Image (cartoon, one colour):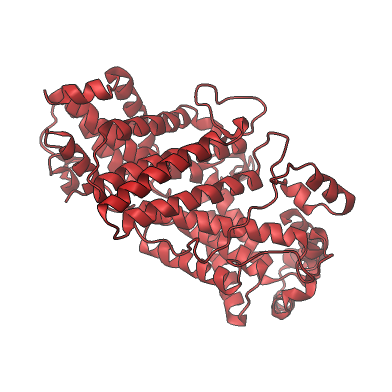
Length: 512
């Protein structure tokens, strides 16, 4: 779609953009405003092809939504790549400032959103623009922050006003390709809503009681854009449940699994954030745990990530990233359930908690060890560090310290022994990786504070180096490090420490 947008824009407006004469630009602007004012429904019928739809909203008919989409994607690319990437460098000019480019493109994207709001636009293109603009905005701000929560709330409101939470079907005004994109868009919003709610400890804004999640057909983007016999053949090759038979992991595949995972996360949030009796929390937790495990085991073999042999020439970095997200989402269900049982039902299971933490940390450290493989996905990489890596690294570090310092730890170590050397090496590698996250990156604050915290635990495990005094870091006292990390005691003390840690972006390492 984007290629069609760009090709048609270049053919229709390139001469005006090159000359940049004021009167020509004013004429172009007026044309874009007029195009945006026309109802998009005029371009949609049951038999409208994806290519016809795209050509009707670009070129001489270009709209602010399309311009906003393009600059939003430029901003995302700028944040996803690393400094020094060839796309930002030239032999004839100074390198492009990647951070500045991302920020300026985000501002341009938001201007397009405001232009659409001025007209009162609410259509599919606007929802796509709003979604991409939200992703860019949230990647520039702290995860779980009020700013991000407010921004995504506006997108959720637009989805509901456009009735995407209701049944999505092909009809006289909606072609097949549009129904598939609408299904994927709702799943993206629904899944992100649950991930943010779980991360920040807030109630979700989209719930299964009012949203009808429909799984998209497991087609590639190219197949969704196809038409006629080619599209019919692609659909016919799917199995009876709509999955592809080629053992490939594509966007629609990931969306289908993300929908199922989001529903499980929502049930966990209900017992974690709700006001249910302890017995009900424990009963529902056992049921959710069983279904979460079954959901993972029932996945086709090619979708179940094997950390012992993740690399294969048949897998692109994007496919491997999808598989990692699928595996971490499954493990995260068990992690959240253990925290919920401790907090709401006073059920303590250090063995289960440490087991799932170790599984999660192995996946994260595998990514860290092979970071160059994910060089084009920096937003996802840092998000995994913050959302999955930091909490479990802190728990494993504390348990390693406890098993080494207390006589009470003998029983715990027998239940779930941590290999001292391997755990210390993995934590050291993780800390070193956290130190490479630059100040301009999303998640920098969490990574910096986690680096100080885990490093201090490692210092306590290995013994302080020369000249280390008190709780000072960088010559200044860090108030988050002045409280004792953990007073040795029984298992209840350990799980209470876990529950007292606030895991949101700004204050996850404060102690109460």
